[in-house]
Image (cartoon, rainbow, N blue to C red):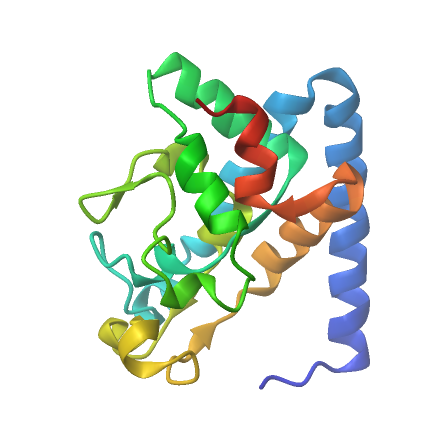
Length: 188
């Protein structure tokens, strides 16, 4: 695990304050748009060459889409709006089945797959939550199969800038919960 010097910590705090200020200003004008912009900003931060050379995740590798995801209320609203515009149904029964399980039980259940995972691809990829956008591994992606290997075999790659953005989302948006619970009002 990386250790941060006092100077690094100071720079991280300054970046957090800067991003939070900009985001809060944008949030006042257009909450959904500001949230979508922040999600896209996270993508720009994880697109750097070093990170891309480090991660082993590939399109269609979807073991991580069987883990519980937390989200902000506005992220859920962005997803719901995207689903409505693109005629994507949010399956209420599937959400309820996931919510009946504890967070620890979800990865091992037959209801573990994200409600938006179809044929090992994310149907809401452009608006996926921050937690999905910033989750990468450098180990063999097949080790992410929780049912087969448990949850202790993967090496997670952390990106400070995307973590700052995710923290700003959580800190400024208030309601933070399991994504299935936040999506229930928009489900059918």
